[in-house]
Image 1 (cartoon, helix red, strand yellow):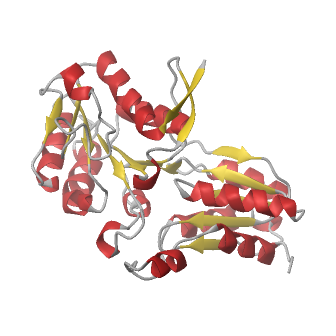
Image 2: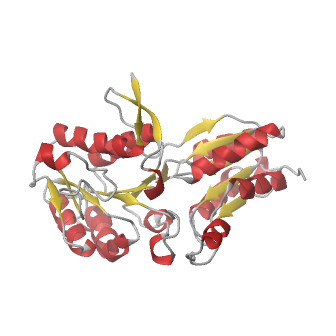
Length: 327
């Protein structure tokens, strides 16, 4: 039986369930305990699990990420919360040079089962240093798995899978959508890492996206339907490993692809998908792969800059009409 709950509560349930199931799981990060989390994702966890398993840290991302990596190397399963992935830049040395490389550097003798999680992307007028997306940065690192999903049901299942995974997993959420509601089952379930899902069936064009850009993609698809263009919409859910098979199968049906990606265009997730499609589905394409990205600049503070910078349904509709040759 499903209940309508928020993304915030779905993530909270995932952590609580895994901490009840496995005593080696613990949460650490800035304000996760006494304050119940900056976005209240860890609400009630200190009361249930105590200060040894829900740990407030100093404002020192490099330090507490390193503590988490060391704990994971010694048999525990840490969940490291970053207040925002923008702050996690300070911890990239631990994530990229230690967590990601433990298994290969030890010749497979021991791994690093750790979860790094927190919000990513723009959330209004937060300017240049608080509005960046980092999925493609982390996905560029062998040894890391990367998930990015805002559907409450799948976000819960993915976080549970990430906590149980033997590899380090980076989980990207959305600062502006913790209040988004969705149907989440009461019973135990897992969402598989590395598998995309078709959110909307269609025949004329494939739209691929992830995280909060899924709302943009679905909005555009609904508007396009009114004009007689039937779009199939795919939610990646996982960035690495990338499920190119689901995308390829869709493109073989629709013969056109538009990728909606909040990150910058150069070297991003959308660029990798475009490469994969030209490699595996080139003969099925009736138009070039088209991308809708954020502008290739740092995001300014003014609301007019934010509106112009980010992908929106109108930009996606224009891109779809270009590849379907509809003026």
